[in-house]
Length: 483
Image 1 (spheres, helix red, strand yellow):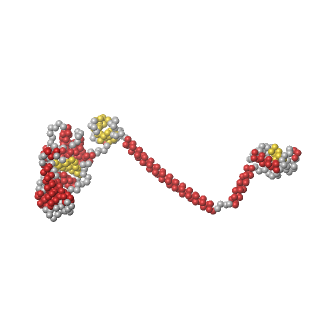
Image 2 (image 1 turned 90 degrees about the vertical axis):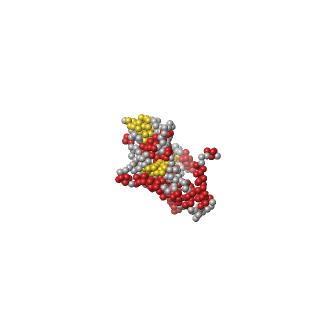
Image 3 (image 1 turned 60 degrees about the horizontal axis):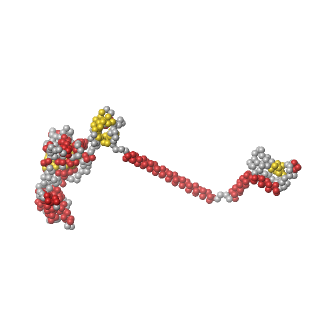
């Protein structure tokens, strides 16, 4: 029919073929002609729908409605856009939706800031833990490092050194070329490799722990007025030991040398050590206190080395006072002895004699020694030039006993019936330590009986107890040892 479009039927997509078949069924007047129709989108070679001029030129076929053809994809896209526009037109966004979005954004921003803060904190913690781990690794490396042998340099020979190890063996070894050659001098303390004995490091000169611990840092709380019955001894000690340190110009003016040492002798318990403590408290000089038995060492030369270091430390910190208690431990008479221990004690004594009056200068140093066995000391110690003054401290007399009792009862509550003169008469012949023990026993008796003051009977009981102990101690009864 003229004016009726003819659909050219070719290669169609399955879905489009179905639509064409349905359209042909509904509109039989439409002529369909076979042609090449490709799926949308088409190109310039794809034939489109054509109209016919004469119906006889084409075979009869079913006809479609008179409408233009639109590919399904473009139609569906148009329908979606139209539906979207209608939806937006009918249901626009409400104001509450914007507020919800703003709240969500602020919440997420806060969460982000919190996570960033936590990240910074964790990074800081990781940094600290890394530093701690590095320190622990360094400590572990030091702990695992092999030990070094301590020795001393004897001499330097070209690029090698003669060293003496701690066990006394002498070696010719090499040393680290990076070490300062000025520090490698004879007598310097060095560390040696455990295998090759090469010098690794030069140590600072230090004192033996026994010598370093001899310095009295905290002054004793003992004063001269706390010592009763020793006025003459105190005056003599100040003249011989304290005056040369406080006023050395006076000795130079008179052209004399100050005394080198003072020896305190007497029975035990009469205040020899107390005098030394009072002197250490009264003077501002360095005070070095040591017991004679500490200088007696086992190995050969160790005792002499301690004496030498003791005097070297006193010279370095002069003016200074060296107090040697119980000097008879190393100053006993030198006899022909075959034991190695006695010979080592004699070597220590000879080093002490050399330090007190030898080639080494002892200016600014005063030596005070104490002993209760004068008969055992070597004559070389007692001559002038070493111990110039010997102060004898015997048991206190009547006035001394009374002074000592007054000192020890100064803070003790006494009853009215206590007569210190009568108590002093009962303590005649007692040493200072025994008089102090009498006061202590009397106070303990008062405490045990529940009294508030020390009575005369308490003192009598204390005197009787000390007398009994003195008598039992002086008795010669071998059978008592087995009871």
